[in-house]
Length: 350
Figure 1 (cartoon, rainbow, N blue to C red):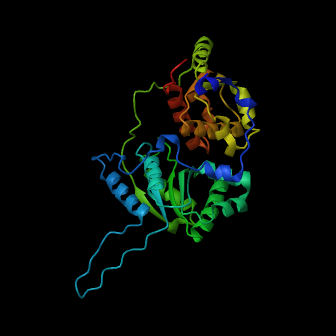
Figure 2 (cartoon, helix red, strand yellow; figure 1 turned 30 degrees about the vertical axis):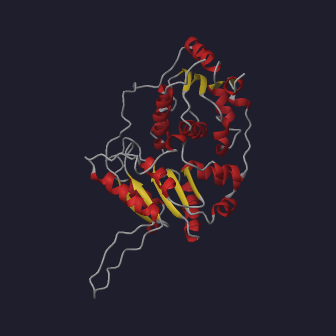
Figure 3 (cartoon, rainbow, N blue to C red; figure 1 turned 120 degrees about the vertical axis):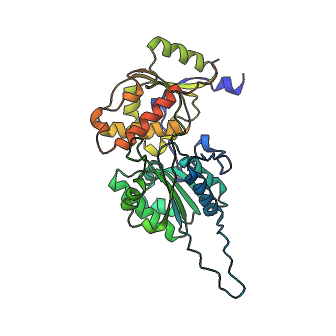
């Protein structure tokens, strides 16, 4: 029996009770699999938007510590070069390659200790380990990359600002993006001022780098997430499980289980899965349930795990009231990701 066959079959997320140590949590702070090979060379700048190439060159210099050469004359003192700030903030709309560039910084910087995670992953780390333990674990690191810095939760923003302040004081360099909603005025034009206002105590530590462009991810996706009939779902799940490990759970069971597992451990819920099966999707009306589901979707998207689902289309899982509220940005991002995962190519069936 092959290893693949031995690991094939159907599992249930609700049977998984993952536990992770602080060291294991830190070990998971690396770029998502789709950005394992991200480099500045593989970033394709759009000639129509010169700011993309300019941003790339600035970030190459940030990652390598290089400074532009400015020579003085024989008897003239070379002009002073502005001090490099410890942090960079990538400002731009959806789909201009901010995460690719952030991962490129991570891969390019010759650092002994460096970490890459979403804002939610860092706040989950603090929630799981406590603030002081998190500071102690991260202190002395060379680089911290923060993708999708959340600007809609004052409490979490305050915790992260305080954390980053302590780390910068110990020599850590920072690189961040924020979660500009896709329908924001100017496609993120005002994200920089929002970001700097929210982290006012740390604003002087960041150099803002603007990246213009259109969403390169715009492609021929249907307007809605794919919702299968129960018969289609059963057939696809059976075919996939013959050669791969897949999950099968009712939507309500998943929602209840997420409340029993710390968000920092959601990545272990989906460990080793080739597809996620979710039956009887309904619209969420409880804010706490919805935010936990968003965190779960983020981990599934990072791992690029296709989703099979029945019931309500997953892009309609959040109520209109929620989409009009304070967490609109998170829900819009989750909808985009759920849509993509429901359309994602499945692994070859057995």
